[in-house]
Length: 130
Image (cartoon, rainbow, N blue to C red; front, side):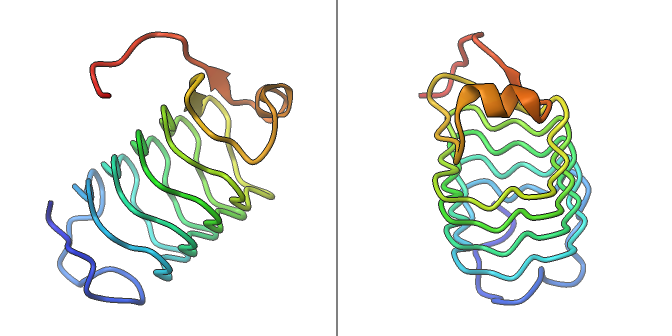
């Protein structure tokens, strides 16, 4: 992992943001509002109560991430992967969710019908991650 989570507001300068490897990063309560992290690898990341409002997270990989009570309002999450992620209590109001993936283990702040209504796709393919 490139980032261990020592900075509370934004990301360290010099971090290559497109495709950034933030897997397993501990960023609970971080302010990442308006950050641009397309294709970022955030699997197993701790994003509990993080502020990701208006962030560009298109095609980001959130598998198994803890996103409980995170603020994704107005964020671009198109084609993001939320397989087995925990989004309980997350704020997704105004977020772009077209073709974002979820599976039977994803904990969403709304039901499957609402997820599909906002453009998310249910993925029933098995992954090799636990």
